[in-house]
Image (cartoon, each protein chain N blue to C red):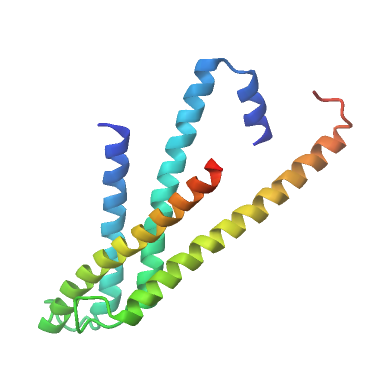
Length: 75
Length: 101
């Protein structure tokens, strides 16, 4: 496997694990039931969506800064 | 760290290329790790309601501010770290009494 592909895969796995952790923390309130309640399941669905949007947002900001840094180095 | 730089200067062109490539790879991985950590931190801090699957305007604002601020924070830490490292290196070279090349 190419190094870049491997990096991407590792980053995706890391992101997935962090998202799982965060959404569990934020959505799953009690351990009385074995099953996810309807409310918890809905929360998880929304949480995953929001996490991905937040991911894209931060990516955009980082990209902007990286570009600025490159421009400054080019001077 | 000084030793690494010194040994790089003495090593062959091929070794140097390999070392630079390794360094680039490490930087890439570190950037990705930093990015994922940043998303996690800002999401954890800013997003608390799940009545909608879209980010609310305040949440979006919070995430932007969080990310921007962290980048500036990490830049500042890097700057100070660089300065202190340079000082330390200069002090070490001073102690060597200028006998080293």
